[in-house]
Length: 518
Image (cartoon, helix red, strand yellow):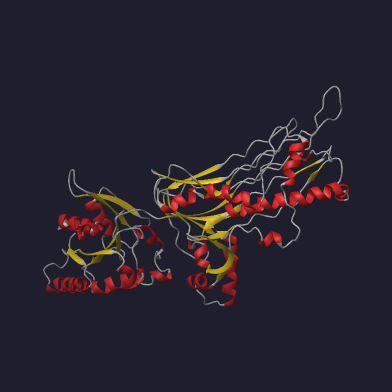
């Protein structure tokens, strides 16, 4: 288990240690006696100052920060302004999903009845907890296509007579491919409104400039490991549920005023535990390994207390109970980032798909027109029977201006972000392959970013104009530049399968460069 995951799984233990410091929330179990209830109520220290709610018992330091709009949405969901649709067939690599945990069920107001008496002691049961939303990365999935647009956990059921607690709401489990990154995001409609507002201000503004310059204010908390976005539930509409006697009737009674002050402390402790749980990493969750245990995205609301908990020596017939706590509704951005050792980068029609077809078991679509590849393809390459294997990802071609959303844009680069190495594929039949290489480097993030990866340069289509000295001269230019950067360079003809074995060995070295450096 990684350090990141262990910190997530330890949250429940930290929460258990935290709660006693706030207030005792150990409510008496079913069939409590008046003495049990009184003892519990005495542990609830009334909140004497309203500001105490905001200061004395905050579970973490919360502050506000501004982040670019582009970090809390996906260009893919701005279809009116963005022409790239990241799906081909059953492949989908970006989804924005609305998730909602269930509300807790309300506590019951009920009194024991039998043949000998028309009304006995209170026996209203507690409401069931609302269902939670969980996520789990599993092997065997390769797309986000089967994800729903909305996941809603069930509300908890209300309590019932005879001290019967309501059933817990059913949880929701979202299963995603390994390699999925989950981030909190704004609702798409809210993003569209912000984009339209900025475009009305400046008709010449581009979508990318708006996403980079428009600030979104977030409430974040920090611990020793990372920043977390603080999520908030809707405030409770009512703190009590009344039966037979009205709210006004109870609020005029001194005994109820005293009880209400104590229960304010109880409600506050629940709010604090919700704040502790309702946090999400600002950087998101990177689900890069299969998971045996799911992680909770949104926790359901706690069930309300039945009137059996309010029987005391003073309060003999409590005609009131507590409502269940609200659930939590948020939007999340799911991005699938393929996990491959190497990523192929090149201009459209440079021969990337042909190379992948010749060296691996993958069967990508191949054609003599631009943007044949519309979705990433991953192939497994073997150096021979019983020898090492590595994986290679082919992504759509990159053109000049891709960083400005021309062509297929750069959205597909997410699929090679994790790769140990990048393989730049050049078409040697083009007029100036070296310029093509420099263009690709600039579009994917400049030389500084490229140098964070192991790099291999492949000069494809050497069979075209092979008899002309200009073709060899172009290769020498590329080779000279490559050597100046410490990169290997190899000429091939993928179509004729020339030098393919050499290419596979050099690609393996690029994928495992750290092992060769030892």
